[in-house]
Length: 290
Length: 290
Image 1 (cartoon, rainbow over the protein chains, first blue to last red):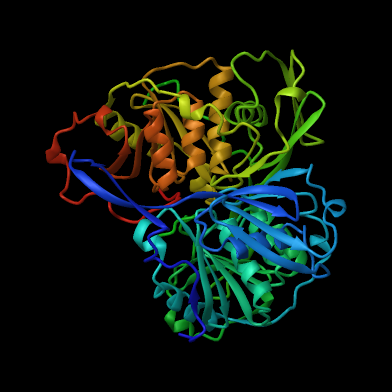
Image 2 (cartoon, each protein chain N blue to C red; image 1 turned 45 degrees about the vertical axis):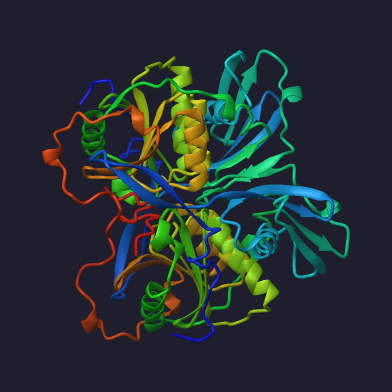
């Protein structure tokens, strides 16, 4: 695995997991590790934007990624600082220019993102004019990446009830993030990419969550030409992906996958002898079991 | 199975599923059924509240349930009418009394609900003072219900990428709803309960989604003393459940389950000989496979 791999959430961090006592089906006491879920309120300058439920491991990345993925901040904006106050559970993003007049925060859209996808204002704006880089995507990258991702220690393995998301360069996971919301996980990756000036035309995004419109829009905003999931598709997610040239691979389990958008960009460089005759028609969604 | 069962989403309804052509991992063309995901905008009187992504099978139930579960409408409110305009994809709820002054719509909270849980205003208010009815819950109801739910034809079985939620009376599913968002599914049940004046002290809620704070709060608002899931827990979800006396059963698969709140209400009326020695420690979350 590439040495640049970072798992942003540390599964051994006691702030992320709480052990709780209960009963199992035989009536015996059991101790169960559960993932923490905490509110953090995002401000831009002195304007309150939203309160998010998160594992709160990377509030700065989450804040920036959320603003970028919602279209509330763009490449032209200068961010002067980000402050996180753990006591108040508040994260403040400071911009050089005034923020108020560009937003349409009164317009609220509840998206299909697991764990609280919500968008305000211009979430959908400009998405339909985007044409992503038509790079080739090798099937060998996918198989290598899935195998590498499996080896990453995760909060999920310790406590379940959490989604994972990886930024992958060819077959190498660069970072792996987790959150109670799959939209938070992808936003944290967007924030990390921005703050680390990450660029690669061969990068793609892997998520354990479903390929809904919200997830597709976020990937397009992040300029990533390929979005991969172990879960299934919604029709509108596919429609948006097709309009922008996003390669959309779903139902990825073992060697199986289905591509419903951008198929012409796939380079089948793996010996088909590896492949069974069954294709990826199993029903699977948002399951985080690895 | 009880004859009152209704599956609110009809899996044979062509408006709910779209067949799309793509490629599988062998490079061969495949046709895949995908679930529809559509925006609907909710108004109360002339005030725009939110736009929701939904399968759009029951906009009226979704609208009423959303407003009730957010605490934006209460038992004291008189609803004079609900209108859905399919062309505009708008649902309007008309109240007898003015609505504006009671809302705090400027406060937005992104919850951990799958597929876009968002709450405004007083979502959390009054929740902590609720004490639910401490009714006995029989393990035999759970096993009966899970077996009955398995037999229900679902959109999930046809297209995947969707959450299910059932209102169950003892072991009998009363209604089964599906949506791209698990928060939408539970809201539709809340709306259906209100519109059908459903009451039962032995009813419980089953969801395929995780037991996050959002799902727990909704169950409490609905006055249901028991919430059951095949998926896992978040720590805050458990905390809220314990404060209100909600019986919270998670990781329900086959005969296995874990109770992390309200355990004293469980009546173990099933012969333990049925039970294997393994308890419900498998990692499982938001997986909709049945």
